[in-house]
Image (cartoon, rainbow, N blue to C red; front, top):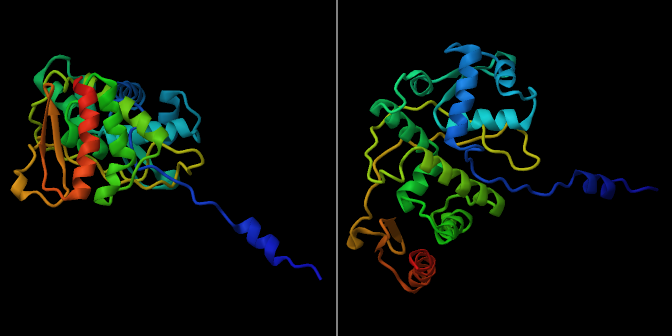
Length: 271
């Protein structure tokens, strides 16, 4: 008598797949270029996915198409409505401002660019914690360490090594393009952004049509670290700007060990 149970169990057994949290697949400057291309095809009208595919020269089921859609949604440049064959995509008012403003140096357009740069939730998080990404490789190491390890300290999901590297590169390009490197203390007005739920930069093997994403955070002023006496135990707040590091924290031995790691990273940056 043949036992089919073992074979069935083996076939049905699936290895768990690690998925990094969402992040834009392309930097902001590329996202705006994609918005311009879609505007040339659709203006401000809602259109099916096929129109976006033609505007960006993608196949209608390609991962690149849905990664581009996800990026524009995260930057607050694109919104969608409906599902399945009735799903429609439309450029947001913020995107129209960036596309149609006749003065590329107008303050309103610059403000819209800065707001878009910090619209992705992970961008706002990195900006709040680290501010300027810095010019040295040492800061890249600090960012990657945070994304792949330190986020877990607060219960947040971590990124894979590959995703962290891609995100750091994209974040640098976006922040530089938005002019935040030249104006690190810029104050961004609160603005309502479209919900960007359900798409993200894909990991290998992801189903591009069924991926959940948290909505983007509203752009906001970057707060200074709180006074040490108000900080929670081992909640280490680091602010880096202008070649100086400010640290506020209340720590026990475990916190001191974490701080030593952070200090080593910033020491490499400053040296």
